Each structure stands twice: as structure tokens, then as C-alpha cells.
Amino acid sequence: MPILPRTAARRVAYDVDEFAVATPLAPDDLTVDVSRETTALPRPPRPRTIVIANQKGGVGKTTTAVNVAAGLALGGLRVLVVDMDPQGNATTALGIEHPEGMPGTYEALVDGVPLEDVMQRCPDIDGLWVIPATIDLAGAEIGLVAAVSRETKLRTALDAFLRGHHVDYILLDCPPSLGLLTLNALVAAQEIMIPIQCEYYALEGVTQLLRTIDLVKGRLNDALRLSTVLLTMYDARTNLSAQVAEQVRTHFPQQTLEVAIPRSVRVAEAPSYGQTVLSYHLASAGAQAYLKAAHEIAARGAAN
Ligand SMILES: Nc1ncnc2c1ncn2[C@@H]1O[C@H](COP(=O)(O)OP(=O)(O)O)[C@@H](O)[C@H]1O
Ligand SMILES: [Mg+2]
Image (tube, rainbow, N blue to C red; front, side, top):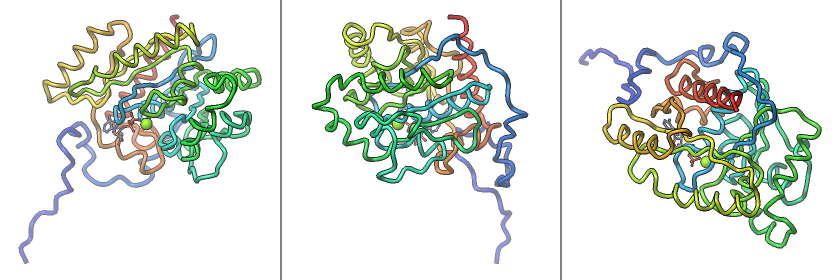
């Protein structure tokens, strides 16, 4: 039998920065010592409600929502994620199971159940809570059709919640469509953050989203403004990523965060462990980038 050197399975080339880890990590290495890693972030004077939207699927909305939320919470802030997507991906990534029938966003929007009654604590990270979504939320578009003020259900629920609870950030993770769920999120937020994937047609669809924002601004929520654009799945080896990044920065010079989130296997695999990449592998390039994004967002908010 030929004796070949046993090499570790090669990770894809774009994870080059993570090659330093040659052997599979022991479970202990995957957990974060939160107390050690905490750096205090500035607290905003008022709670900031940020909707993460882009009607394109797969651009990194959910990944951004949970990892920015984790970064803010590790910075000592109190953060609530509202999962507005029936897929419940944000709920999963924050370590919460979401079987059909479990109360969550649907009950809050359609039945008027108070948010505190459906809220759950993220098991891995202090100061991070989630309003979970189950597949039942897919029925909300229909459940709300005949409802009075159906676009303002989330805003009403959050207003009531904020009267009795202290949180610094509320991040709303939207489904990939501009339906009633996204509309509720756009009406409830003051800020919008658009994740843009560094690929062809990146800006296509953003134009439509901007039109929708203008409509919402004019009619339902004057406070809404595009505060943040985040480049996601950036691949430093390709000209394409650099070109898209440049195009986006030209379009949104004020809003685009300095940090771009690199394409990273760690980021992609964290949700399958029910974790954010920050709790899963804090040293990875993806986790560090999201941490930096959270810091930039907090710093900008403090300056406002
Ligand atoms: N920086 C990244 N590196 C590698 N994979 C990523 C990255 N960001 C997101 N992904 C993966 O891309 C897919 C789509 O991301 P997701 O956040 O679910 O997008 P959306 O919520 O916009 O549909 C997911 O499988 C996710 O794990
Ligand atoms: Mg999503």
C-alpha cells in the first residue's frame, strides 16, 4: 500500500487567510471568551432601529444581521434581532430552533402578542435577543391583508416594547422581496442598511429598493434614511470584486462602510452550528470583518 503523506483537506483558495488553522479545531477553540473579547462600544442616545434590506436573495442580509448584531452585543450593547423572514435563517444562526407553531414574529404581527412574550435569548452571546420566525410567518402576508394599519404592525409592537425595555439596537432581517413583511420593517425603522454582494449586477435591484424607500418615506415613515451600505462576499483576488466595490463606493460615498466582508468559509459554515461567525470562530477573517463593521456602525451612530 503506497504511503502518501496525509494532508489536511484543502480549503478553497479564497480562505487563504484561514489556512493558519491546519488541523480541525477542538470544540473548545470554537467558543468565545466573551468577557475577554468585549470592547466597549459607544451607546447610541436613542435605540437605533436598522432594517437590513435588499430584495435580491443570497446577498448576505441574514449573515449581516446576525453577525453585526453579535458584534454590537460583544461590544457590550443590548441588541434585538427581529426575524422577518419565514425561512427563519437568522433565528437558526442565533442558536434558536424554530419548529412550526412556536410563537414568534407571526404572533406579534398578526395576533398582537407583545414582543417580550415571544422574544428569546441567544444562548452564546450576552445581550443578544431574537424575535424568532417560523414558516408560519409565510402566512402573515395573507393574515394581515384585511387588517387595519397592516403596514404599521411592527412599528406599533416595537414602540410598545421600547416603552418597557432598554435596547440599543434593533436589527430587522427581511425576506428577499418587497412584500408586506419588508414593508412593515421599512415602516418600523429609522435606518436602512443594504448589503451588496460583490458580483455582476450588484446594483441592479438596489434602484428598485431605493424607489420603494422613497415611497415609504413619503407616505409612511419620514424618518427612514439609507445610513449604511456593506460590501459582502468580497474576493480580494478578483478584479470583479474591486470593480463592484469601487462602483458602490462611488454611488454611496457616505454610506459605504470602510470594511468589506470577505468571502469566507467560516462565515458560511457558522449557521449550520447554530452560531454566528463571531461565536463560532472569532479569529477568522470573516468574524473580524463583521466585528469591524459593528464598530463602524456604532461609531457613526455615536457621531450622529
Ligand atoms: N462572507 C461570506 N462568505 C461566504 N459565504 C457567505 C458570506 N456571506 C453570506 N454567505 C453565504 O451566502 C448565502 C446567502 O447569504 P444570506 O445571508 O442567507 O443571504 P440573504 O439573507 O440575503 O438571502 C448563505 O449560504 C451564506 O452562508
Ligand atoms: Mg436571509
